[in-house]
Image (cartoon, rainbow over all chains, first blue to last red; front, side):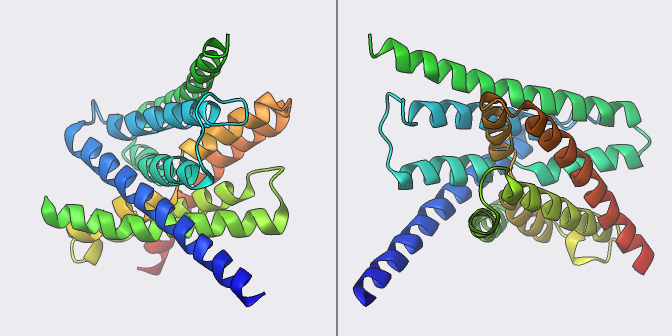
Length: 142
Length: 128
């Protein structure tokens, strides 16, 4: 009983380590994107870029390693990539802050454009990733 | 650049671990038919980023220094909140025929995150 509890606690600790490692890598990539991608006319392109690419990757990887997927990935690998890497890489808080700052600066149209463009492109990206991986899953079977 | 990188690394460990803990805790408590965990994470993260953003407007604030900002905002809050899970959960709801829930998830996430960030700013202004 106690041996089982210990191994379960150890397993949880390892999962946390995988998630944290992915989160650090994703966050550093997001930080680098924010350093190298400038805002254009006040429009926060860097955040849009990471959120679109992160949504694409999570949709692609989730379908590719899912139950019908071509690629086998362990639970740890999936947590590393999806919860860690993609979760650390993308950010809802910066999107919120930047939109509120645009509103505070009286740039209502840019703020509304940011909301509309962001939500639509995030969802199109995750869908595209999913569709592409689903197609690959089918291709490799036949 | 190196100091900034270290700030982001340290903050992102805390933010990622907090997100993993909260999403797991909420999923165990209320189930996974609706992504309440990610919803709670994003709204609470937006509220805190509003507070930090409000504080940073004061040049004497600790958050006016670049490394503190990179630690708290780029590191902790950036890693804590997530768009990728939000997108995937919305897609999964839609694919499961839960179009209404998917729509509500989008509208409430955006509306409440923006309101929470605004409230954070207002709280700082009110306490001055």
